[in-house]
Image 1 (cartoon, rainbow, N blue to C red):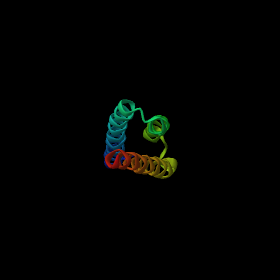
Image 2: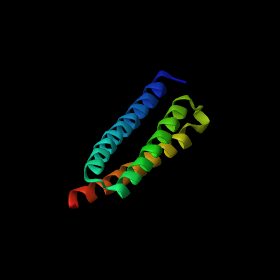
Image 3: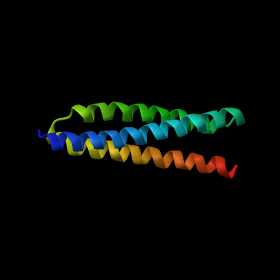
Image 4: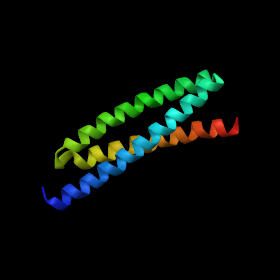
Length: 99
């Protein structure tokens, strides 16, 4: 594996890791708001999303060690999971903004 490929993969990993950390921070903020307002339904959704975030963390760790043959598929899987998680978080944020 070339140094350029390693650098490109590291940049991808860093980008995804940054997205996941941003989502986690938003989820923690939303969780605090939900606890303050006793929004039980939202707390359950947030807990489910935090579980999904942990699964993404595991997939990201697997991505870092995946072989070239499986790298692109693993990368696509992680990126789609992150996009889905981000969309879910935006939906919860919108509920809190409208409340």
